[in-house]
Image 1 (tube, helix red, strand yellow):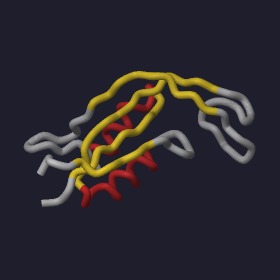
Image 2 (image 1 turned 90 degrees about the horizontal axis):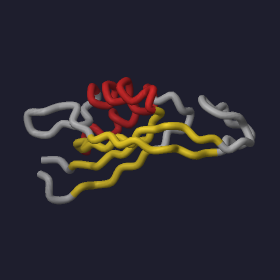
Image 3 (image 1 turned 60 degrees about the horizontal axis):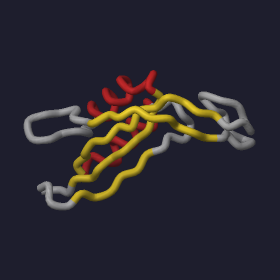
Image 4 (image 1 turned 30 degrees about the vertical axis):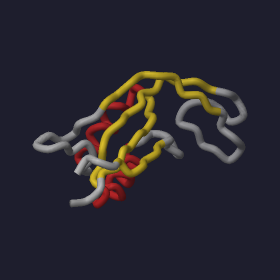
Length: 107
């Protein structure tokens, strides 16, 4: 048995479906006989692109807000690198905001 990790990523609402498909196809969200399992909540992302950035949304030096979704799912540790690669390819931001950590007690 391998260890599970929780994965959380923030994405513009316009790209939620595409990102869910990409990470699910890479193995995120496998629970028992189910795949592509996740929990999605809406929110507002805030950021200021600094000089040198190439923002997907907003302008360098100006504070921006965007409607985003927070995607939460579990990922088997052996699939985590592949899922993160898929996340980075599918995400529209040059620096996607995401985090993961080990989850105890699941398997």
